[in-house]
Length: 449
Length: 179
Ligand SMILES: Cc1cc2nc3c(=O)[nH]c(=O)nc-3n(C[C@H](O)[C@H](O)[C@H](O)COP(=O)(O)O)c2cc1C
Ligand code: SF4
Ligand code: FES
Image (cartoon, rainbow over all chains, first blue to last red; front, side, top):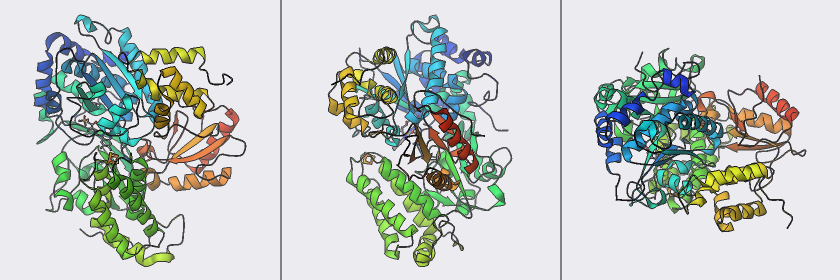
């Protein structure tokens, strides 16, 4: 069994409630932080832990915190990113629903470390029922003197609020999130300035993912050095993986970073293999935005080493033969799955979610969706495949926010590794008749590298 | 104008409390949550008049409300049925058969994606990933998630929603059985 830091008590009956959470040692870390540590010491522990942002980009959390500007007399904010809209990702929902107090405790400890007296949890609108769970947990915490004025007699004050979104993937991008929290459209801001200098209401702000903030609790509890012992190399600690698609046991798993992908997919402790005894065809390992890999490259690196689930392990080989850990949204596809159709669902998604500020993203995502639709319906030509490649290459790196890259990478990687399959759709043309099952081609070509 | 658009005293109290969450002068921050309350209270959608009323409550210009309401997918700018069935169509759900679910609902209710049944009971809408990929296929109706769907479960669900008859809103848990 791998070590569990966040989900250790997930199966304890009633762990949603403050009482049971406290019986399991909950809020002892907050007490330790408030009564025996300075904000600087907490920051040091987080730095030592090597914790990297769990929202997708993997930026070192301690470093991010150290950038926070601290001008005299200006409010600072901590905003928790609970927008979780990256297709294939559902770990934050699971954590907040099952054990809300670990997030609340993490928010209080982190807010104290950053010197914030008001903090917000921005949660996607579709998670209304989860927002209510958080609000209940927050009410319990206020009641117990863990929020509000003079927390645990320390003299530290904090107000914590849940802010609800209204359906927009782009609001997961941190500056779009801040715009949305200010009651505006979720248009990402041009950076710099970064939120650490001018974020919410123009004040210095840290935005962190739910899982990142929850991880601060075990880090402060046992020390950053102990946390850094877990995992592999620069990928320290544990990571929540959302496993979905054709797996026998989809769900949320807490893994120690460095676990071999093969073990994750096939062992009984984790996903228990591919559904219906089928073969694995491909995996999207870190949410819709990361490059898709064919089975042989997700199980082994190009050098033939077992591929590990860590930031470096999944990235091994660069975009030519590797991918990214991203948000940890792990989507497995069996031998019958159509890469082209799966890609179309992604391209349709990015087109739908583009905020429209940059023309390469606004127009390019629409063109890619259209061309893929054409190919899928047997009206495509070989030139269309090249056109797709061309469009994605003209979006990447040319936009205000990384949604453009996120839309481009899945297209690039699908063509890179499965070009044959695109060509097969083009060649079979009108023979792909069965409307419902046109994604099931009879003879799926072998993936190419 | 008749005062059709007026929050109930209870809702108004919630709105007032919400505005207290933000620093002085930043009450516009309450716009998204207040629009949700307005939609729930005013028949499940946001008419221009409803948005004007929200602008008045928050003391901002109507255009500031329109531009936000039109940006976010959860605000309905047209009337919808009592039960808005939001079926996820993205990768993981598609892999697990969401298309079959959509086709089944379309056939059963005689409507297409985006349409409402003549009796105003159901509206069907395909949506992007709802963070329920491990329990795919799934749909959301109001605040409630219905997961691990099968055609049979959808049948039971639709029957029970119809029997229940209440309008679904995001701000209230109103789950019915589907097993
Ligand atoms: C289009 C887009 C969507 C994103 N969605 C999310 C999200 O849903 N949740 C999240 O935590 N981070 C998301 N991010 C990353 C955030 O911008 C930001 O990097 C993150 O919240 C920082 O927290 P972390 O350092 O703790 O990971 C998204 C980024 C982009 C470009
Ligand atoms: S890249 Fe796309 S989503 Fe991001 S700011 Fe530009 S148009 Fe908006
Ligand atoms: S893909 Fe349907 S809930 Fe995520």
